[in-house]
Length: 419
Image 1 (cartoon, helix red, strand yellow):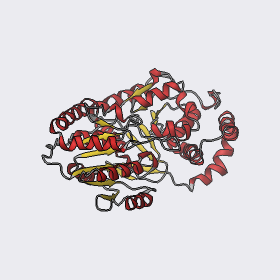
Image 2 (image 1 turned 120 degrees about the vertical axis):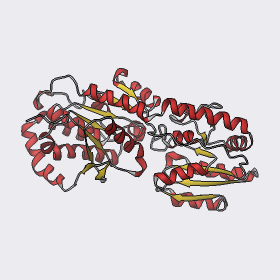
Image 3 (image 1 turned 90 degrees about the vertical axis):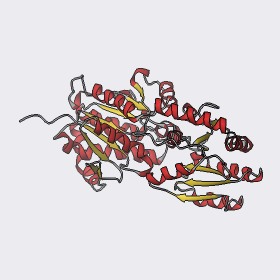
C-alpha cells in the first residue's frame, strides 16, 4: 500500500471566523499551492472551508483528558507532566483568559493525540501563539512531531504576552510574524533572528482602483474595526466632533461590532453626532468592499489598550490602499510600515484632533496630494501585499520545516518549562 502523502495539521483558536478573513485567505492560498491540509478549530468554528472539513474540539472530551489521559501520561510521560504541572503551579499567568487559552491547547493535544497518531502530520502549525501553539508544543513533547508557530500582536503584547511564549517558540521550526514590529519584539525577547519569518498577509486579487471622487463634499469617512479599546474609537468620535466644529461637512460610517458599541453610541449622542456618524454593525466581506467603494478616506485611530494589546497592521488598511481609498492613521504599532507620511497616506496623533482636522481638510480639497498618496499606496500594496508571492514564501517555510531532523521518542525530551 502506498504511504499517505504528508500533511500539515493547521491549528486555529476559532476557524473560520469573520473577523479573521486573513487566515481564510492563507488556507485557500496554501490549498492552491498543492499542500495537503487538515484543519482543527480549538474553540467553536467547525463545518467546512473550501471543501476541507474543519474538526472542532468538543469540550466534553476534556472529561476523558482529566479522568484517563492525564493519569496515564503521569505514568507514561512523567517528565512532560512534571513540566506542565510545574509551569501551572509556579508561574502566574498574565490573565485568566490566557491561562485557559493554554489549558485549552494542552487539553486539545491530550484529547486528539491518539486520533492524530494514526495518521501523524508532517508538521503541526499553530496559527496563534496561544492555545494552538501550546497544542503543537505538547505534541512535540509527546511524539516529536515538528511544529511551527504564528506569533502576532495579541500574542506578544496582551498583558505582556502569552504565558509560555518563549518555551513554545524555543523549539518551533520557524516563527511566522506579519510585521517588522513583531520581528523586533521577538528578537528583543531573545528569539534567534534567523528563526523568525516576516511574511505579510495579502490579497489574492487586487480590487479595481477607483477614480478619485471629484467633489468630496461631504467627505465620506470610514472606519472598519472591532469595537474594542485598542481601536481608539473614543478618540475617533472626538475627531468627528472637531471636524463638525470646524465646519467641514462629512458623513462617517463605523463598521464593526464589539463590547464597546453601547458606550460609543452614547458618546456619539453626547457629542451631537447622530446626523453624521452611523454604526453599521458587523458586515460580511462583500459588503465591506462596498463600503470601501463608497468611502473617500479610511480612518484608523489605533492605540495601546490598557491591557497592552495593540494592532499589528490591520488588513483593512492595505485593502483600502489597494482600492484607492485614502488613509489617515495613528502612528501606533505597525501601521506606519504601510502608511508613510506624505507618500502613501497621512499620520496623526489621536490626542491631537486638530491635526486630524487639518489632514482630512487637505484630503478633501487637494486633488494633487490625494492622487499622489493613492498612487503610492497602491504601489506599496502591489509590492508588499500580494498573497500569491507571500504565500509562496510561507509554503517554502512549511516545506523546509517538514524536512530533516529524525523524530525522537516521547521520553527523550527532558526540557523543562524553564529551559
